[in-house]
Image (cartoon, rainbow, N blue to C red):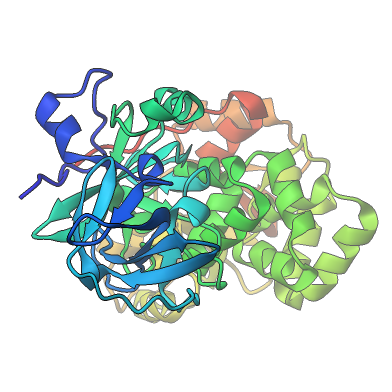
Length: 438
């Protein structure tokens, strides 16, 4: 039995071990190879390899092969394939039903639909292009096991025909960590990993990097693979120019949905860079409450506190009990994990205190919120405060966030420490921290 690669995202060194090189068969090298009967009589030449895409297996099994016989391209089922080597494919019978090939759901022609196409390496969190594909025999089942993304593989394909038959793995990635995009000849989606949760492992910054690297069609598929919250978090991490392109290439309803899922300050940043007519159209398509929050941020200069504050704050009257507030937090649409603190206000809606989640957790449930107020005076800034002023306040007071209030003392929004970092670090120099490997 030939060995299948098992490590997640294995990158084989330039000079691969001989046993590994011998076990892999280049799919590109099989193109045009001779297909023979069991008795050795030539049937035709290989056109493509067709693999099953609906088995939820890490390594898709061969469904059949396309063979050029005379002037026709015919279908031969995998059950009739006895052996595949680097130079030829041998069948186990001499009796063939040489029917013309008709694309079927969940089947993909790998040389036509995958080779030279964009793929996403889930474990490496990067976009790659398939320079070659490798198949291997496993219990007499030919499976797609790896993709080669090296220039060496591409040069081998472009060189003399005698080079193409030789597997010389360069930068090889285990197929189980690959997600492919696009559509096959019959319109079938090429989402190999749609039933698994690989994408959930990636951080928003990593997903943003992938979205920025992919083409338009592939972007759409990646976004469709994500939950609404995942997509929103990823869009918030995209560079402004790339996000503007994505919004323009989306239909207006879709773009409005993305903006609604984003934090108001991030949505405002995305809308600042597009033309006024499109901005107005998208705001009109957003729910009134979400649109109002974004418009509030847009009404301020982007270099001021009001221009980069997050207006999605949680407030509570000081007359409410801790128990009632906790119940309200657990049933609110906004996840509790996203609530930095709760803004306590008086009967007139004026700011009184910024209650941390720790304070609320430790307080007696029956107490009213006005009775748990303690500690130093909260840190607030007016909406016209500069980025530097806000940064200085956070540093000097050792706070993770600061509230923005108007002249009357009503809370307008919150600025987190990472909002300050985003505002101070140039767009092109932002660094996405690599994902820790488990």
